[in-house]
Image 1 (cartoon, rainbow, N blue to C red):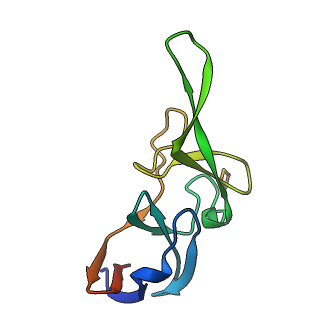
Image 2 (image 1 turned 45 degrees about the vertical axis):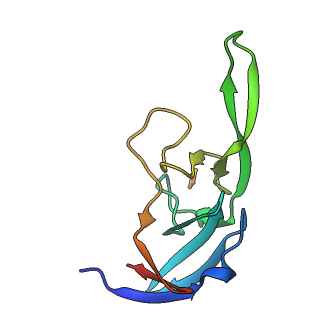
Length: 117
Ligand code: FES
């Protein structure tokens, strides 16, 4: 059963930089993407790496001419162990797979961020 924990103040969560804390016995990371706050388990679904130590890289897309273009507006989180890349909007890897980042429900109460773990 999930429990609700205080995580941090909203102002502590920065754009493109993970804030990692232990909550309810789990390592949890928080990041701000285009102003939106996301909280997730610091655990790569592939083999358990601390995914929040990964780097954000621009998404690689094919345009109409089949040319590879980079989209910095859609950053992907690259795992530090094997380099898999995950979309921070939906948690999906860059290829077809059922694996997903484990986003966590959070609530804002004024300036305080609470997470359910
Ligand atoms: S543990 Fe993350 S890609 Fe392998």
